[in-house]
Length: 144
Image 1 (cartoon, rainbow, N blue to C red):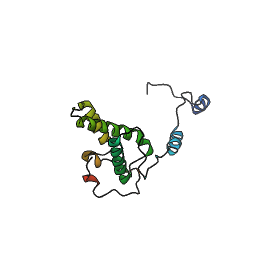
Image 2 (cartoon, rainbow, N blue to C red):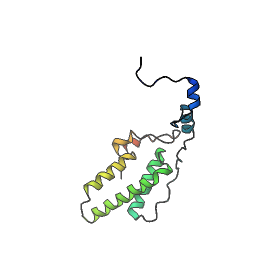
Image 3 (cartoon, helix red, strand yellow):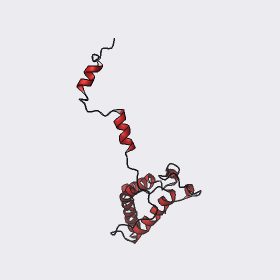
Image 4 (cartoon, one colour):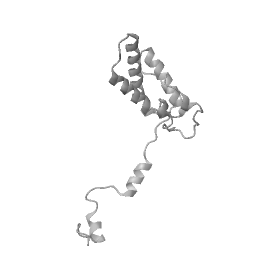
């Protein structure tokens, strides 16, 4: 005997309806089929207007690498902008011969890794566009 809650008749279950408002497997399946696919970009988008020349150069480089891999989606542009801006800030700090903050460098490294732009993460990054072939030299590409 199971000491849990008492069994209910099917007729009483039907009468009770769905009091917890839990979704059935059928409803969950229908919702997952309706999910929006990300828009894959095929050209380098225009960089944000407030970028300096270092950030714009980094933007063009990163976007072109991700487009070549078929891994640049429209929803990724804001994090990429943040990464480019941070990279330009670090470059300017180095030009001024001021050591950049170690936490900032760690954050930048994690951003590059999350987009598959480090040697370690290149093999783990999957293309969003399965039809597009990956470059044969992609695993040897280095970050600028």
